[in-house]
Structures are given as C-alpha cells and as structure tokens.
Length: 265
Image (cartoon, rainbow, N blue to C red; front, side):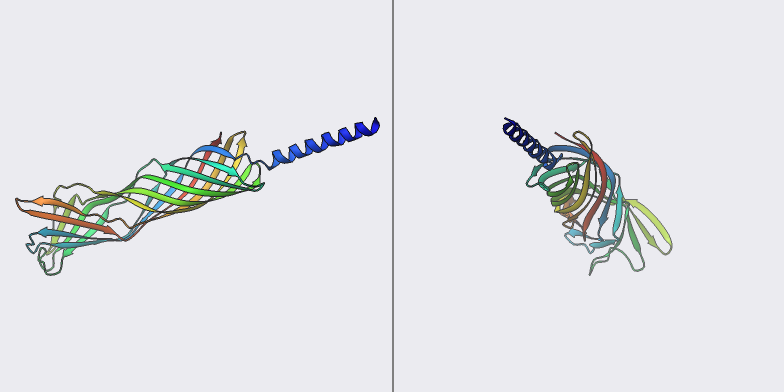
C-alpha cells in the first residue's frame, strides 16, 4: 500500500514537472500580433540629373544637375504578423508593416545648363530651378523574422524581406536666370508631378519584452535599399510640338529607428 502511494506521488510529481517545463518552453510571443511604433526615419536621396527635350528641337534642350538630399522625420508604423515556435529557443515569423506619414525632401536646387549643341542659355547666363522636392509615402514591408527567445517573455529577432515606397517627384515651381549680375525669376510651365513605386530590400534587428499578459514593448532598427527613382513625362507644346522631362536620382535608401508597443492575441 505504502509502495503504491509512493509510486503514485512520484508519478504525479513527474507529470507536474513535465507540464511546468512545457509552459516554460512556450514563448509568450508565439501566435498573432499587432503593433504600432514611432521614432526617427532618415531618407538618403542620391544626386539629381535630368534633361528637358523639345520636339522638334529648336536648340533649346537643357540638362540639369543637383546635390544629394538627406531628410527625415518621425514616422508612424503599423505592423502585424505571426510567430511559430519551432523549438524551445527559436521561433520563425512572417510580418508586414505600413508607414502612414509622408516624408518630404528639402528643396532641390537644380542647376540648368545647355544640352550639347543647344543655345537656350547665352554665354555667362545661369539658371536655377526652385521648389523641386521628392515625397515618399505609402511605404510597406513584407518580411520573414527569425527570433531567439532569451526567456519566455524576452525575444531578439531579425527582419529580412521586401520593401516598397511611392516616390513622387515635384517639379520646379520657378526658375531664376542670372546674367551680368541681374536676376529674374519666372514661374515654371505647368505640368503633372510624376510618381513611381520603388521596390527594394529590407534588413533589420529588434528586441521585444512582455510588459504584462499579451502586451509588449519593442525597439528595432531597419535599413531599406531601393531602386533608383527615374521618370519620363511628356507634354504637348503648341499644335505639333512636345516637351519631354526626364528627371533621375542616383539612389534611394532609408533607415528607421523605432520604439513601440504591441499585443499578442
């Protein structure tokens, strides 16, 4: 009788111990999550080069150049995803996030010069384009996120995947011509501001920690590299002519440092 009682007690203790080890092994981050964050976003826009081409050519074609731009601000990023626990210490996840705030560059001072063989500007004359900017909006990321569980309430993770952002080119609003020390500013001819969707890669690193059941805080840094923005826009000039504007930028890169909160469902 005593032997049976002892065996039963040992079995119960082993079952409790096994159950406890399973609970400890289960990360609090396994499952669906949603989160929101802010912080700082920096955008690096490469040097500008462009051309204005008239058809038929009246010796008025020009080319333009401008410096690189660094601009940024505070983003607002919404995210969601799912983590699967594949072992006691490792999880694998998929996720997506969306940046809801538009970021706009400072004015790009475009220096205009004659295209080869053209004479729109006379000797000694300079022309500067004013009010040119680039707006970045509707950024979304799709990524895989392998993670290591420090313990059931703490997690470090990597992000790697695809990023896309809409880059709108806002044309010069006016041009300033200077000749013999005298400057005159005239409005630019009206035209649409073209936009394009730039795709690229995303890499990142982050840390999450539970605050209370389901609710967690996190911090992460990410880097996104995109294809170089380029545009072609053609408008009618007179009855039979046309003007083609071809603005290009050498590169576009973005980095984000974010902190936020989320909830595991």
